[in-house]
Structures are given as structure tokens and as C-alpha cells.
Length: 158
Image (cartoon, rainbow, N blue to C red):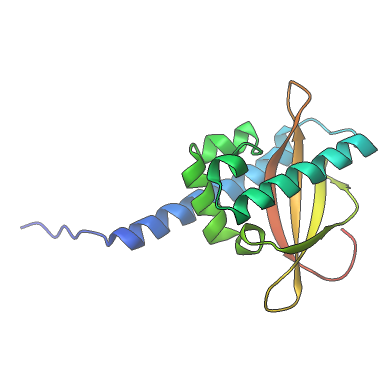
């Protein structure tokens, strides 16, 4: 006699998103360990980071999965192989970023050889959160977003 039970599709979808988010977090941790030490970015690079992040947030606000996905690094695209999977992960795991309306850029920081562009996001219910975007230069010289970590806003610089 079999004790096979069918999982609720909603629960299964939630589990898949959580597993993908966990893999995303592990990738974020490994980026710092495997990447070569990055050089400090210049003003042109910083302007590019901000334009990329602005464009991705605008795409999230339009529910434009392909538009948002184009700014992801190849490592992110390996974990989230389609724009729809990527968008589902952002919707569930990064709601402040997914629907950011009011935000500002803090000074770029270097941490463990990674370039971080902090973005201070004002939450609809009040308060703020800081999204730490990891920026990664590609072989062709372009920049892509290699990850994002949300941290509570302490009011201090990163």
C-alpha cells in the first residue's frame, strides 16, 4: 500500500522559490570568495551602477521580467535560468526592491574585494531598508548586478 501524497501546487511553488533564494544567497557568499579583488570604481562606473539599478527598479515596477533580468550577472542567470523564475524570486524575497518607489544611493563601498552600491529604500509603511547591490564587471567591460542583500537601516554608512 502506498502512502504517496500529492503536494499542494502553491506549497510546492513556495518551496521552489525558497530553495532558489537559498541558492542565490550561497552564490552571493561565494562571489566574494571566488572573484578576484576588484579595483575601486571611478565616477563613470558609479554613474553606470546607478543607471543600471534605476533601470532594473523601473522594470520591477512595470512587472517587466525581461527588462529586469537583463541587468543580472551570468552567475545569477545560472541560478535563475529564466526571467520569470528570477522575477518570482524577487517578488517573494525582495519586496522592498520589487516595489521601490522612493530610494536614494549611498556612497559605493568595497567589502571583501566586492563592489557594493548601497540603495536606501523608503518603505510604504515608514522606515527604510538598505539594499546592498553587488556589482560585477563582465569580460566585455560592462557591469551587471551580481546580487542584492537587504539589511536594516541603521542610519550609518556601509
